Length: 115
Image (cartoon, rainbow, N blue to C red):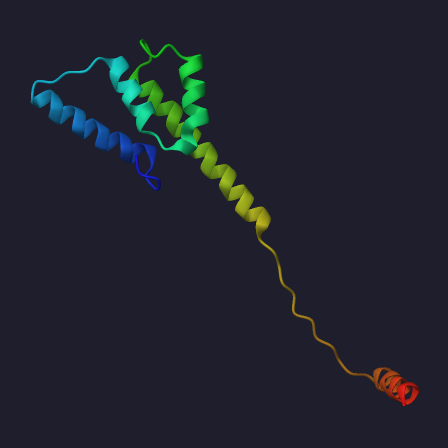
């Protein structure tokens, strides 16, 4: 899986490769397919991979259920990043200052005291 690639795009490429191999006479057990998908995920997915490996029986885990779990996690991560981006936005206000007679008097007093 590429770093900027979505789970669905990766799964589409994976399925294409597996189907091509089946056409050439090579077949895989479901457990091998599940392990290959988990193995090809980037390092940032390591906590999710570990959780799946510990919580699920990989020998009976359907490929579709794995895909659903990974897509759900991907969506949650994207939503979490969007919330962080919204929190980081700052608002800059432009200040303006109007001169008044009292400001001029204060400036004059300051100049006089410094002189």
